[in-house]
Each structure stands twice: as structure tokens, then as C-alpha cells.
Image (cartoon, rainbow, N blue to C red; front, side, top):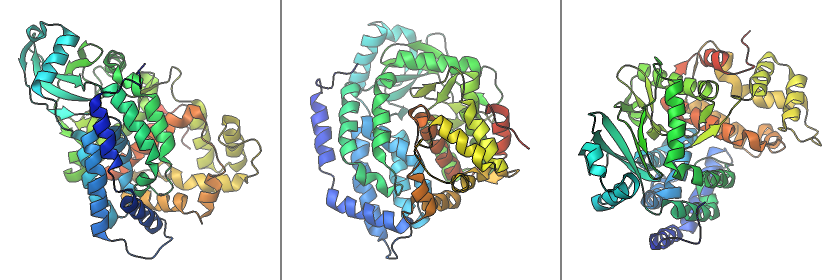
Length: 440
């Protein structure tokens, strides 16, 4: 476990940077944007104000790495829900958090490699590039050549990442109101708490290596999903095969419609097939973790966050989705109550519950469906407007703890689909991989 009392000096500076955020300014901007998105105010929000808010908030997050960067990555998928004129500055700032962070000095990297792989670590490589090729929330990646000639990716954890993560997430929990600029009504505290609960797992690269090996074995030779094999692992250094590809962020910004559709379809396939094939759910669906290989496969790069599902996805999910599509209001109501989504003392009407759910199921009620920012914005308004019936009913529903991570990952994946504006037969994916789901 991470000892939160043993916080490096650098973390104090990180906390100070958080404290310097202009709370009044950013808070007013967040409040105004929330009103604008949910349709409760007619005033025009200043584009300049939004741009300055984004720059100030996310420049701090980018400097912090650790928990702040991780939270920014988790939130980045929600920018698709914002109106286009308001989303642009946030999209620019958030994209920087997906794949960029200040690099470690080479001497620090060498010291970490010696501690984790042994003093003779250089003998394990025939080449090693001291300049990082990529950065993540708790580590950075270097390109190298293993002694046997294989090109490899070497992920080195930032020194003090554990205490820094805990400290950052604790501070960010106190600043949760700032992040409502990304999604009206979004309660950031449960997300922060869930991220904090997973800190220890993500800090253990040997645990990540076991998860990656499970995925690599499950998808070995697969024509759609490519998982790099693990070459070596220590607690704070992970060496895997190097695989090139187009970053998903580039596909989102510049990809052809065919590339967008392909990437979205494969992300959906990974999301629903992983629990059945690997007994694991990939739980970090931000674009920085994916590439589109030249042969058309989806490259999956990070397995620090996974949900262990030894029995696969819960079958009631598929059964309830099927009943909802068929319009079986009472059966859906009974099933949701049985799973804990509807409190036992709730008096909500079964038909109102079905009406609440049906718009969310649009992607699987059609032969093909195109995810879009417009669709997500419409859902954000429907669910986030305090005056709407959907908002009122949603406040009466519950999210059982066993479904929290599945729910977050699904929402994150949908956010990426909408950024991609991908079109495919999503119900075919569910029919293949989601237990209990049946197509008429």
C-alpha cells in the first residue's frame, strides 16, 4: 500500500500549483457553461472566457502528471457532449493530457532501470533511446531494442508516483466543482474515489504485466485486436513489444470516415469481448491507449486499469437491454430493482423508467448507427437539465457498486465513439459478445 504520509517534496509544489487555480474565475465559468449546455440560460458564454478557463485549468493538470493527468484523461472523453463553440478550447487542452507530460531526465531513467532491472540493465538492450517516445499518467515510455533484436517499449514509472497520485486525487476531490464545465450534472467525486481505489493496482507494473499477458494470450493471432506481448516486468518498469500505428487522437482529428468506423467498431469489440475472452475489462478507454495498425487491427497499449470479471459481463445487462428494446416495461422494472438499480422503496413508474432508457439504446435499435457529438449533446441535455423528467427520474435511480466500473468504462467508450463519429452495426457486436442479449 502507498503510505500517504510519505509524500515527496515535489508533491508539495504540485499541491501549491493546484491551490493557485483561479477558483472564483473558473467556478463562474463552470456555472455559466453548465447553464448554457442544459438550456437554462440564454446568455452567450464568452469564447475568450472559455479559452482562458481551459488554458488555466489544464495547464496546471498537465504539469502535475499523476492523479491530475489521470483525471484529465478520464474526463477527456466527455468533451464530445459540449456544444462545438464551447468544446474547442477544452478539446485542445484535454488532448494534450492524453499523450503528453514533462519528461524525466535521462539520469533519473537510468537510475530507475538499474534499480528495477539490475545494474547490468544495459546488457539487456542493444539500443536504448533516452528521449521518451510517449508519456502516461504515472510513467513515460522509451523506445529501445531488446538484446534479441526485438523493438520494445520500456515504460518507466515516475519516482514518487504513488504518494503523488494519492495527494493529487485528494486535492482534486476538493475542487470537483471546477470539472462540471465538462458535463452538466457530472458528479466528479465518485470518479475521483474510484480512481483513488485503483491507484495501488496501477502502480504495480508486474500486476499490469499479468493483465497484459492475459489479453495477449486471449487475442493471440486475432484479426481485429493486437496486444503487444510482455518481454520483461518489474514493479516499476515494464518492457513490451513495440507496435506502431496511428494514434487514435489523430484518427479523431484527421482520420477518414472508414478509419473512424473501423476504430470505433474495434473499440466496441474489445469492450464487449474482453470480459468473455480474457475475463478482464479494459478499463481505461481514453484515446492515448489505442493505435490503428497499418493492417487494420486495433493496437491496445495500456493495461494498468482493468476490471476482473471471472464470469464475464453480468448476464442481466444483456437480458435487460433485450427487454428494453422489446418494450417490456414491467420486466425491465423488475429486473432493475432485482439488480439494485431501483431502490426497494422507490415508487417510480415502470413505463417512465423504460422511457428514460430507450433513447440511450438508439445505437442498437437500428441496423447501423452513427455516434455523433450531436447525439451525445442531446442526451446530455435530456439527462442533465434539472427541469427534465429524465433528470428527475434519474435522481431516483441507483448505481450498484458492482456496476460502477462497468458503467464508467461504457460511458468513456461511448464518449470516444462520439469523438470518432463512428458508424457500424453495434447490435451485431452485442449479439456476438454480450451474454443475455438477443436480436429480434
